[in-house]
Length: 119
Image (cartoon, rainbow, N blue to C red; front, side, top):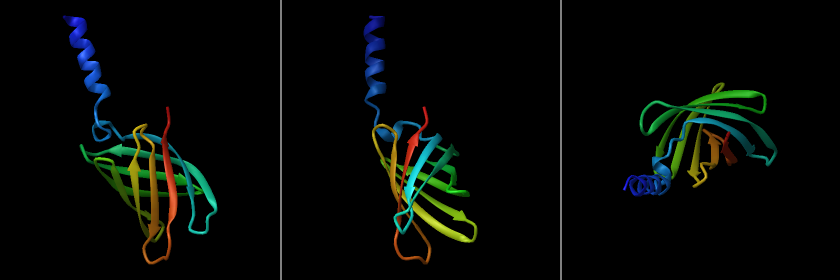
């Protein structure tokens, strides 16, 4: 009986939707700028509630900080980098990878960014 209960509990954990999995942690960053040039770095997401967090990026020789929020498989962050303000919207993949598009207020275009969880 105990083995059956443990098996059922493990199946339940494996079946949890992406929204129930924690998004906090450290990620490798791979992105493209508006002009298509590439950058890389690291991002750290720190949970502040069940749905909100802070995020810090170290990319391309610069750093930026923001607030973030998750809703099912959508993850968004508003950030400041120097005097510029931006927005990034990611889709959370089943493996925990975040694939996104970002922009900066008042500028035409967008860049891309993928955050991959560090193991």
